Image (cartoon, rainbow, N blue to C red; front, side, top):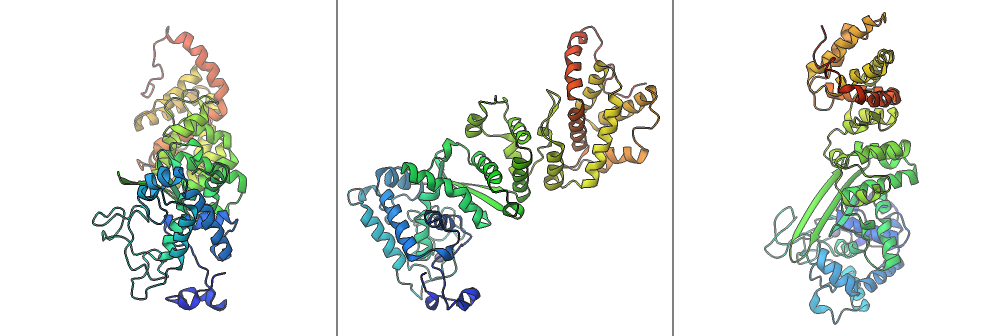
Length: 482
Ligand SMILES: [Zn+2]
């Protein structure tokens, strides 16, 4: 353990460490994605879980491991200089240094950096707040995206470079080991709890160990698709709900070179994370069918992974934008519910915020509709359902219920479909609120109908195609029947 308690600018910040004979670990989580990613690399390389566990020997080994790779052309020029730290002097990625670039020289630079004396007159590090920064501001060749000279990039105060301490800067030099190359850019997944970050980035280090090249994220072209895939696998592997309860994930997908600097930030809302975890575990087949609906052309079973690696998916993008994916739970063309009711219910309550009672009520109404429709001959059944499927306006939705009530009377079913109060609730309580509108109710009802009447409906549609041409279309049109 490195002991630096005495040199610490404000030991009171670390009460627990003070009790422990003023021992303070050399590194700690900072909340900065790139610095934390470097720490993740050190931890994974040494099979450790938290910064306090890192020893001097661990850091030495990681430094040697990184330096050997960084001295290779594929890393220095092909990756570090080209995508992450252009002209880096510390990692000797600057093309003019290629002749002098050796593992020993890079390792020496890294050691020198870590042992750099702290200047008490320098400002406090803007990232960790624990140490004084280096005397001179740092530019994008040593720290991604902070600009250079008079050209600031993604840096809040728009001033000339970043005031960063040698330790934070040291950690960032390990970022190349743990980042993924996705679609010509670099991907870092920053998480809370930090433990999750170790899980999500372990594959990158494993790839580096196997191929001595930076990980290409299984050839995924889109960061969010890769994340959703990893999350699915991870939830099935760990079965730990505590990881997701309050989890937060933000993706940083960037490029930082002499030609340009660009950054895309994708935040994954916590309820969405909980939903993905639940879906992957409780109804993986249903979830896969829902995702498959997110591509314009539905992939075959064999093509699913190819699509997943390459193409933007509407279900993913709607989840990330906090828009409803309810319509994807049903397959209107094949009149099928894509998932289990329990998954739909979880989505509605956890993500859409629909209360459980309302959901149960709608389910019950759905069952009453099914009870009515079941009594119809197949071809009429299909037409009734189509009336609901095609309802695009509130009055059309209303007409479906009024017509169904009349049908119940004709069929001699004693009890009405709904009381007046219930009717009013279905139609109006949910109003035109974006998430919980009558359209939500419509999708939930269709889900229930498809779930229970799929076979009958599919049989009906086949027969219907034959008679359709001979009949006047729209007997049960969009209006209320006389
Ligand atoms: Zn720092």
